[in-house]
Amino acid sequence: MRLETPIARVRGLGSARSGARHWWLERLTSVATLLLFIWLAVALLRLPSLDQPSVVEWLRDPFAAVPMILLVVATFWHLKLGLQVVIEDYVHEEGLKLFAILLLDFFVIGGVALAAFAVLKIAFGAASGPVL
Amino acid sequence: MHRNPARPLSPHLTVWKWGPHMLVSILHRVTGAGLATVGAAGLVWWLVAAASGPEAYQGFTSVVTGWFGLVVGVGLSWAFFQHMLSGLRHLFMDVGAGFELRTNKFWATATLPGSLLLTALFWLCLAKAG
Image (tube, rainbow over all chains, first blue to last red; front, top):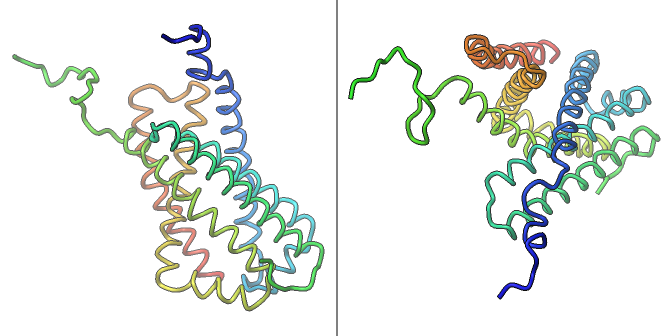
């Protein structure tokens, strides 16, 4: 005999009522990544060279470092929303699905932290040395 | 049973024909997944290498300009442009435009040569810049 009420059975299933926000943020971050990658392409093409000193000198400028951090955040946010949907579509086993989304979130947060730290390290003019 | 081939076929679980829109739809996912994993890792690697110093950066460039790196790089750039173009198509469809059969098929098909063309242009620019 199940002691739970029908409402308890359906809770957590079906719409979590946050789908519209997920959908909207995916669009918002897609436009942001599009603009920021156009900026990146133009900025890199204008550099005299793509070697380390040129890239570092360029990223010392706040007008390069700030959009670069925004690019990293927008890109990782967008890929988190997108890959989450892919996982939810193809991974049906509940535990495995949860684990995959957990891994994805760790990858995203770790990636953003690492990339942002690298950009800030350059921008704040720290002596070059291993990040990790 | 007689079937008039000029009539549209209603969708069925096992009876359907590949169309450009289906190919572009699954390519959007595949390219997105590739960019999200390999592409994102590459972006982080590039920034970390630049912050770590000339030696680490040298390690990054030697892999990226090696034959394996170039194959991955060409693949990623194509994935980027394919995902970008079909993403733009999605944005138009999100506001309700481009659902007429002909228009829909045209823009779905256009993303394919479009992404190849942009990939070629991208590598031409890169080769020119050295």
